[in-house]
Amino acid sequence: MFALAGLTAVLLGAVVGSFLNVVIHRLPRGESVVRPRSHCPRCLTPIHPAHLVPIASWIALRARCSHCSAPISARYPWVEALGALLATLSFQRFVPDAAHLDAASLVAATATFLFLANLVAASLIDVRHRILPDECTVWAVPAGIGAQALLEQLGASGHGVVGWRMAVLGAAAGFIGLGAIAAAGKWLSGREALGWGDVKLLAAIGAWCGPVPGLVVATFTGSVIGSVAGLLALAITRRRTYLPYGPSLAVGAAIWLLYGDRVTPWLLPSFAP
Ligand SMILES: [Zn+2]
Image 1 (cartoon, rainbow, N blue to C red):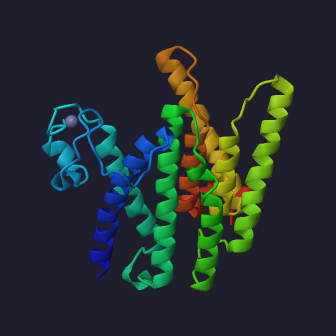
Image 2 (cartoon, rainbow, N blue to C red; image 1 turned 90 degrees about the vertical axis):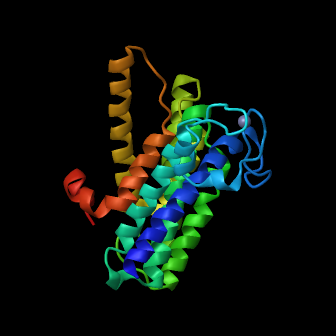
């Protein structure tokens, strides 16, 4: 039963990853994410249901459309694999053994995974289009507060369960904290240094992680990883590349949600739970 639940998590993760590819492609273009059916962007031929199997069909089709041979981006199987990985890690986080196979833990694992999947879509859209759509940020605030309220009702406990009051506080802290920095940056430099999309994203992360230590650890680790990535990019390419802040914050949030109780004691000892 436990092994079956774990396998289901992996497969559902890959399927959600497949849907994320549709979101990443269509959301910034203002297209509906449900209709029409997935089609080849070049010849517009609807994709055959047999070719919708995550990862496997990309390999079987040798990365080309079966109708017009247009190349299919390697992003598709990678995002599907990332979906499967994040679902597995979320499942392990809340259902580490058969004794934890209960409704509260499964809801916690599912909710956490869906938020992480949302962060993947937000990050990849940010990298490609330099925007963070409201669908990935603003909507995640009530979703996070609702998820925490539901987990409270189900009697869930442990890391990642902060309760709806802390979710509200976390969202407010994220919005006001980064909002103040964004406003100050604009006042000082006269230009938009930090996008409002980042502010809304941090509000969403606050709703899912709670203010302290969740939001603090997520922002700190995300900013450190983002800075290191920026310096590496500078060293490799030898030119200043603009790196969006959204993916850094998303990575920080993922680290907190999946491993926060383990990394906090040695990362930020004063904030250890
Ligand atoms: Zn085609």
